[in-house]
Length: 162
Image 1: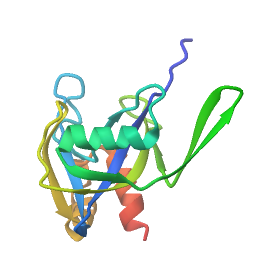
Image 2: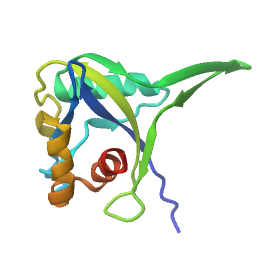
Image 3: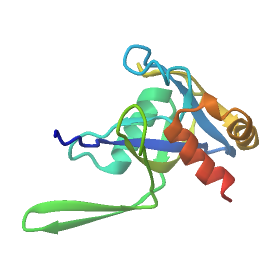
Image 4: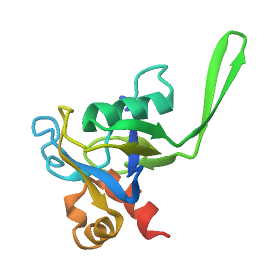
């Protein structure tokens, strides 16, 4: 039996710095590699590079996919060193794991503040836009099938479990 491993991705729950009731969503667009989820709403994010700090990854992914500026990751980080090894501890993240579905996935989701007019700049997304939190809550309640499962679970837990 071949052991299947999970690669962690970093995603961001991005709020508008000037109007925090607005949250950024984009449509996933990977018709070749993920046709089932293409066109569904998701949070911006992507692959976590080896030895890349969590906040740096989140900032890079948000900027790459959305074109937003003044990206500020809201995570507490502390660096530690021991015998030449450098380790970083990050707090205030949300972990979301796919337990059954088309592919094994684990998201480390961080809160982000950003400014600007979003536009799709990444190769795996389209229709990036600010959505008012109340409208997003209605979408989660009435149109759950329009989200990727991972982003739906993260947003539902965060916005509806309050």
